[in-house]
Image (tube, rainbow, N blue to C red; front, side, top):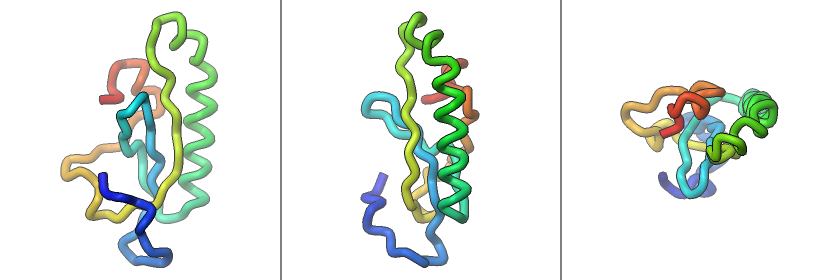
Length: 94
């Protein structure tokens, strides 16, 4: 992924990405036109993960962390698809 901190504000091509991180692996979970929508989605995903945190620890699965960052449409992987909020439970993170 490109250095996303260099994206200029107000750029027409700029989106806000909810990024899921497990260890050193990052995956764009969802993209939004507004930062507020991305923050709401990140918070919702974090609540879903916390609801399953005990299960994840018992099954020795890593717990994903979600963050919000600006991204250009051109920086999305060519065949990118949204990551289901609970996709990590079915091995769909990778």
